[in-house]
Image (tube, rainbow, N blue to C red; front, side, top):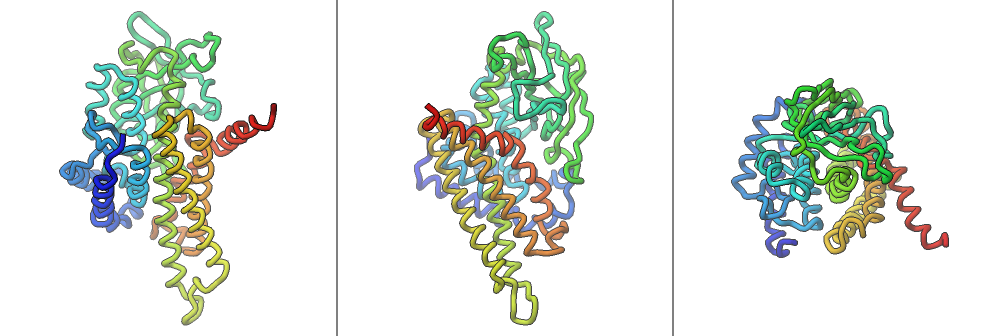
Length: 398
């Protein structure tokens, strides 16, 4: 499903104007003070404005309160929102909540939708997704140590997770657990279970310091220990053994979201780089922009950003028309390519700013800290490159 183009362009224009007027002027406040809690009242005020505009939670189907956008259309919205740090949060389409909404819509029971999905869509609560473990390689998600053992009508969860993003203050976690370790099919050993964070045995250990910034609230990555954490079997999301499939359902469209957000961040850094190159003089009347090295960086960045956008929107269109499985090569390609473009553009922008680029007087240092991980989460570059190469070589290795 997709909105008629005229209607979509009207919505896109409204969102762009909102971001420019209500969010961008406050960016420096976010740079100086990274505490999510300190900005919460401001963010709730902006969320209420978005609700009144009828644009809250745009990424989900109309029947669940969203706008009914296609993935191709939604990608363009994510680029706009990616130009401001809290843009996605204000519109309630931020990770990990957006991904959790998607899989609850697709796989949740009526009870799960009423109890967990509805307040999440309404923006009354937050959630987290608990999959990555410190003791097992995230690049091989079929191997993990967290288990859920059936005990009557309950499951007892034990295990150790980290980089459970946004767990600080979340109301529930969707947890990837091993429920059938003996299954001959390794892709059917895991399940996903919804765990309210107030459940006894859900132990929040800490927000992990990432490049010196531990964050808080939604803007943080937590370490969690599950210790005899008992949840009812009605909290199992989808069939037992479907954990890996559900994770793939979540991650495919999610990579479109990430990549288009990164392109928004690239455009922001690119604009800053060009402004700095034009205004910073090495000597009177001789700005940095006259230097060939700087010109090369500007040209290369422009080409890479434009190429990224076209690649991502092409992948989104293929998912819309043929499904995520048919677009698996395109999804992997954009994941490693756009992540690297983001690193390239950010690094060039920092370099053009010199010492200023290393400080929190601009958004660049914060973007660099937060987005170096883009080449790791949701599948490391090396995993995606290997997948793309294997698919290509099927045509040659016969």
